[in-house]
Each structure stands twice: as structure tokens, then as C-alpha cells.
Length: 371
Image (cartoon, rainbow, N blue to C red; front, top):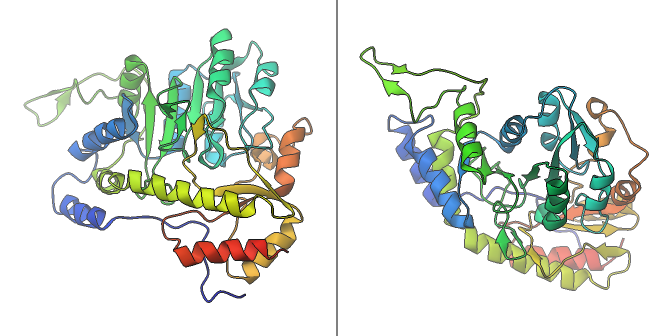
């Protein structure tokens, strides 16, 4: 059953239009942050029905800004998920705060709201959640808990651009949401991110902080060829370039087509693997729509499964490790039983725009053949 080519786990999707737009930018005078960044922000707002988008250089920067604006600092605690990319939790350390890992739901990979609430203390200053593989968290429950304790919810939606929760787009629910436009995301800008802040004051502060604390919109040009302004707060070099914005703008035109294609592929996988021995599918509720960044499922004898898939030319991946295993986050925890269960058996399958119909049929055939 050996396939002639290797089927990649992830593959960037870049439109031909983006190539032309990059050339135009490179031949112009604005290659750093310029008008295209503003256009990118407005186009993202329209695409997902939200307001107050602030473009940044990566989603980790967006999370750092959200934590900073929320007042997270030394000695504080942030309740967060251990099942994510490390970029979700590094910004907490950058604020000299402590990540407090809550357990997850083994049937989704997302943070468990019940476990979140029991870990809240007087030191808690924020709750961070991540939409695993693009499947929305239980945002109503999380925000209800957060409101009871006067805490902000910060969504790491790096893998969930275009996802829907109970009829509302991800990005329009919690106080802060961070999107990613990194190379392998549904919409790529090569690299980049976006912070969505529902409060206009939060959005304005983020705009100022992303450019070294300088309010670029209100500074005044002077006769010396510079600007008159004051810097009131510490800022960062988190701005996006026109080059990245050009790529993102062009690729945004493919959003609906990508969403439809990914949903179709995910449905095919679910139907094909529903009764396969040794596979347990993740939960898929009717009240939310995943962005389907990849297809996650549980498999028995995972090492054997991965070896079999590799032997047949198909890349699979756990995508991210549980963060608590890393020394920088304190080392492996023993009070996360569902995370332990999840980590032993989950795996991701390829789900992207470069998969052909033959590729999908082949992947299904290989999995159904057993391991």
C-alpha cells in the first residue's frame, strides 16, 4: 500500500495574488508598517464580523499585549491550558507571572471550565484558553466564571480563525482574542498575528504599545522632519509589516473556500473512522464550528499507528506537547489526570488545501487497514 509521495501533515496555502501584491509592496516606499496594515485590519474585521483588530508580528505578541493591558505582572497568576503550543504560555512568563495549568477535556483537548474555577485564587489575574485544533472552547462557561471573579478571558485562537461558537465568530466573544497568520495557519501572512479587543480603550492601548508606546495616530509632524509626541507607557516592537499584510490580504480572499474544503475533509474523516477499531473520535457539538486546523483523534497503540502511517508515506503528528513537561514551566504535574489520559493517545492527521481527493482516499484506506 506504499504511496509514491510523502503526504505532509501541514502545508502553507499561498494564493497567486499574494505573490503579485508582495512585488508591488517591494517596489514601493512602504515595506514596514503602512497603509496595507490598516487595510488588513479592516478586512479581518469584515471577514469575521468583529471590530477593533490590531495587527501585530505574531500571535504570541498579541497575547503579551492582552496580558499587559489586563494588568498581569510580577507575583500574579494566570490560569491557562497545558495542551497548546508553548507560544501560548511564554507571554505569561514574560510578564513575570506564573502559569497555573488547569486540566483539559480529553474529548476535545480544550481547557476544562470546571477545573479552571477551582484553581482561582486571590493572585489570579486572567484566564487563557486555546481552541485545540481550531475547535472552540466552552466560552460561555469560561466567561461566566471569569465574570464572577472579575477576570478577563484571553483566547488563543491561533488555530481557530473563522471558527464559530453558538452562532458568534471567534473573536467577538471574550475581552481579548489572539489570531495567528503564521505559515501553516488557515490564512497565512508568512508570519503575523492580530489582537481583537472588544473594548475600544483596550484596542487603542494595544495600538500604542505595539509601536514602542508611541501613539502614531495622534503624533504631530514637525519642521525637523520628525514628530512631536510623548511616550507614557512601556511599549514593544510588535508591529506588522506591509509585506506580511499584503500576503494576508490576498490570502483572505480564499477564506470561504478554505472553510468549506476543510469542513468537507473533516466530515469525510469522521464518517470513515467512526467504526474503525482502535479509534475514538473527538467531540463535535452542533453549537460550534471548528476551523479544522488539523484532524485530531485518539488511537490505541499510538506508536504502532504512527510507524504504520510513516511507512505508508503519511505524516501524522501530536502537533504540540503538554507544556507542563518543560522545565521553564515547572516540570510535569501530577494533578492533571485528563491531560495525562489525552496525552497518551491523541494524534493529528493532515487536513489542508494541498490534499488531493486521491490523497484523502489513500489516508482513509491506510487508517482503515489497521495497525
